[in-house]
Amino acid sequence: MIAYKFLRAGAVGPFSDFRWPVSADGRPGPWVAAGDPALCRRGVHACRVPDLPWWLATELWAVELAGPVATYAHKVSAPRGRLVRRIERWSPDVRREYVQTCAWRARDRALEALGRASGGAATERLAACATLEAVLDVSRPLADAVPAARVSLTMAADGALAALRDMPAMGAYVAAHAAGRIDGREGLAAERSWQGDWLRQRLELEDAR
Image (cartoon, rainbow, N blue to C red; front, side):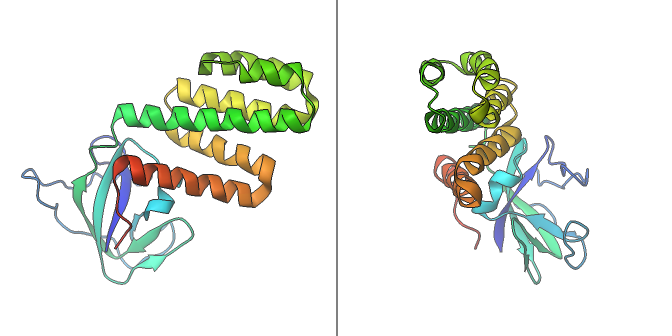
């Protein structure tokens, strides 16, 4: 099975600290054996495209899995795996584009919350923000001024801060929960689905196969 795996710089596992062997000639790396899958304990864990927003990190790799593949809510796992190729399109510029897009979507959810709270002038102030710096500066004071939209406005500020600090995983998380604040669990799930589709299209990814 071909799936995807996010790693820290240098092909290092973000949770295991395992440094994955990488071939020097562009061919797939050597196989790594990790034992029969046990959620978050054993096995080579990887992602299908819809799973990617939960596991963002510096590098993205296509990974080949071998053996019986276990399927979990937001990941898959197998006894063995090897890195096939790095997805070079997941570059610093694209990571910034992604987290900035998530931040603006969190801002838009705050606008929805203000609309429901009859925010009036507050809605106009937030809608007029042309930069994420402005979103950050405006959202926090408005959160105190419009209690009915406080949580959504705080999330808008957190999303802007995540983008300004180049933290894609945090930005995606905030955007998802900002959607959930407005539309419940269905809204959160829809936002995560949108994030996965953005990555699929922008990185030209194929579904796990």
